[in-house]
Length: 163
Picture 1 (cartoon, helix red, strand yellow):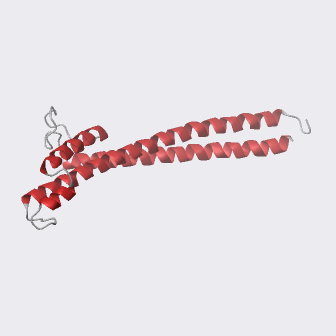
Picture 2 (cartoon, rainbow, N blue to C red; picture 1 turned 120 degrees about the vertical axis):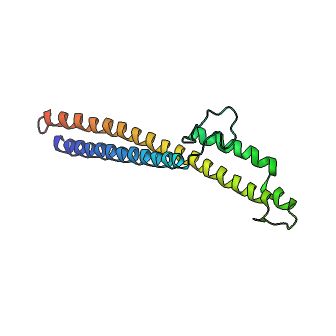
Picture 3 (cartoon, rainbow, N blue to C red; picture 1 turned 45 degrees about the vertical axis):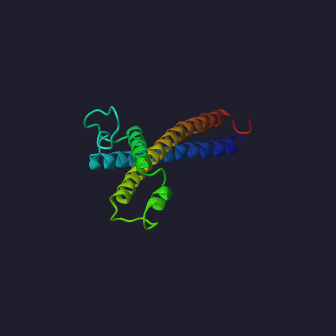
């Protein structure tokens, strides 16, 4: 029995190590992507004031999920003053289709692009946070599983053969 318990203990230890390794990979990947997205936002040098956020601090960059959400929501409000929907914009057009030479259509499209860029940043940062938190959970679970395997292995070593 002692030998089979040792094999099980070693398998549990290996699972613990794998859990910790996967957790570390998740944390590194999550943080790497969050840093990439944040740095990309900072490189654009878009401030909350640039997009018309009321009460924004002077020069406050859009570089987090919270500021990106606030900016995107503001842009959406402004875009809806042009037309409540894309369909309404097209129906109001003389040609019945998007006209890139029409300043109104162009402003609407540019607002939609920036809004979507910011919402994508919000979603991406949220996903990066979930990945990081999942990694931390994997590390903790791996440590717990590995610790259990280690205790089981030590108990199996103390048990006399056949006992």
